[in-house]
Image (cartoon, rainbow, N blue to C red):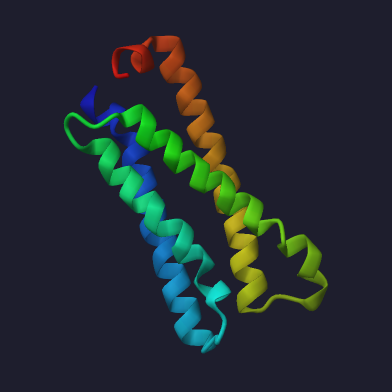
Amino acid sequence: MEERSNSMPNLTTVYGILLTLWGLIVTAISEAQSISSFAPALFGLPLMVSGEMAKTPGASRKLWMHIAVTFGLLAALGGTRFFMVMSDGLNYATTSMLMLFVTGSIYTFLCVRSFIEARKSGALDASE
């Protein structure tokens, strides 16, 4: 049961790490001069922190996971810019936007599904 209850915080931490690494690596490889190249990392850091905080004893898991899904949704929304610039072709910037859109959408979907399951099982009520 404990492993199941930590699955979304663990996923959140891993997703945050991946976004952070993506932002740092793409910025270094592309030698970008713009702060916007760090966008994935700027979403990844709060996701990583939220995932870890949701796992700490005594922490409000509900609060931290709601913060995390907010950043996941913001990542997906930020990635929608891809559709405005996709005619430029795939480059580091457009690939990052597409990655944010796809992964942010999937992550947000998984969080919402998890929230619904937790609400049905009464787990959210007990951990408030």
